[in-house]
Length: 169
Image 1: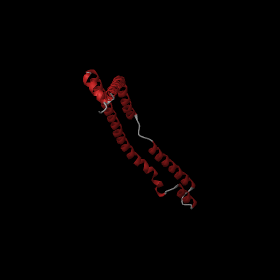
Image 2: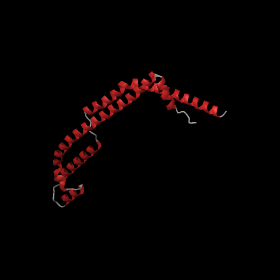
Image 3: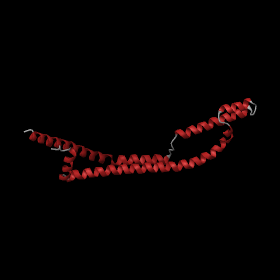
Image 4: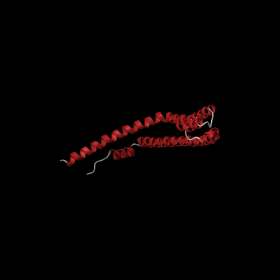
């Protein structure tokens, strides 16, 4: 004979106890709603960041024009060689090195920072606030679920032990 699982017992308990059934249904719905709200907020943050980064990249393209003088040089060593061959003055070399360092700093900054502003912070706070608002009710429902599952496991064990005892007679 097949053993009775706690899930099967819980299903019977839900059928017999209307309040437990309503609580577990509410918990499932609450979890689904919280997950959906989180996904929507995350999607809004992503869309907003894309929009802002697109505008920022257009601005950066304008800023890149300031570094157009560096297009002739692939490395700092090439700048140094031009000075060595008297193609540029020492002052020009220093200015190009300054531009080079500034451009590298700007590139590094672009790589390491995600776009964050007041709006993205507000959206993250909204997500946290939603979790805070429903935390207490979710905990109550999860406690009811935990107790129901513990009881279902206990009952399943009793049923299975009594069946095994009956079969061993």
